[in-house]
Amino acid sequence: MFSQIGPMEIILVLVIALLVLGPKRLPEAGRSLGNGFREFKDSVTGAAKDDQATELQQASQTAATATERETV
Image (cartoon, rainbow, N blue to C red; front, side, top):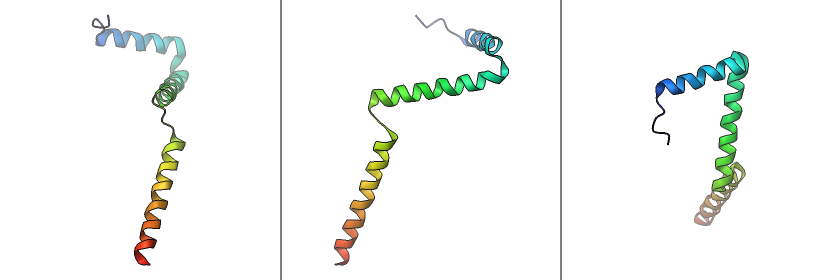
């Protein structure tokens, strides 16, 4: 289905986006689109920044506890 999309078609889509949105709003639209994709990916995979921070904190606490046991 998408095997016919080449560089010319991509350039055409970018030119149309530039004409519709304008040079000032195009970066903002791209940024919000990227953030939307990132949030979607995180919700599908179940990964969250808070979960990763919690795992790192737990790992550092475990390492600190292990070093305390070695010194005693």
